[in-house]
Image (tube, rainbow, N blue to C red; front, side, top):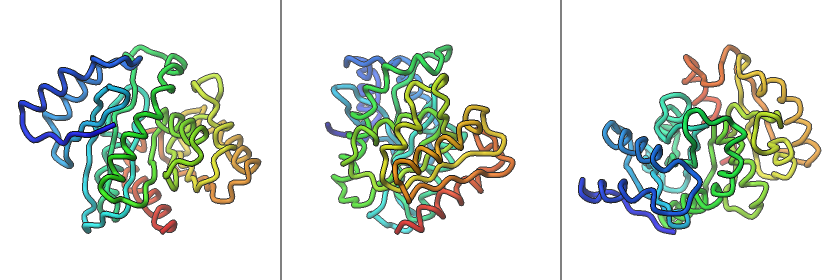
Length: 262
């Protein structure tokens, strides 16, 4: 696994055009379109290219405002979107840098827009390699403390990764808008929470999706049954699944909880 920071338009075009050459179930044409759009419009952060089993995927890295190079948050988007998505993802990847965190927002495997959530199940097999590439990239820069901050489907991907990789160097998880309804999510996130022992912030809104709200007690029970005394669930009054109009509170909740860990 390796990464390449873009230094010229020529390199940029060659990397994007080769993004679909590896064997992956992700919609690489859609990943390419997202990458081109991000590259054309990015104002905050630097483009990096990471590699997962021969597939090059995009990341956006942003240094901590205070110059701290010891803590980093991997930011993970939801279903079908990208690492600079304006709802939840961009506010977190940009504003967490004001609270001492370097951020690395990464492209996860995606499907065409019309794909249902359950169709993502085969893509979960590719998630560990993407996380591994992001973690290696950060560790190569000497970053000692790594957390994952994920939204929606990205939260499900994160719980699956951590449940199957208990010795990962990731120290804590922030899971925003996580659904544990087994009929609507490709993996059983409550079962995964039962196996996760590191600190977890389970954050959602009072006006979130029905599956997120209805399964909240199940998530608490799963973490409790698993003996995770560092699991914490918070509901933000008035927030919907995308925290529209509640971006400041979203960032404050996440940054405040992370600050208490260090």
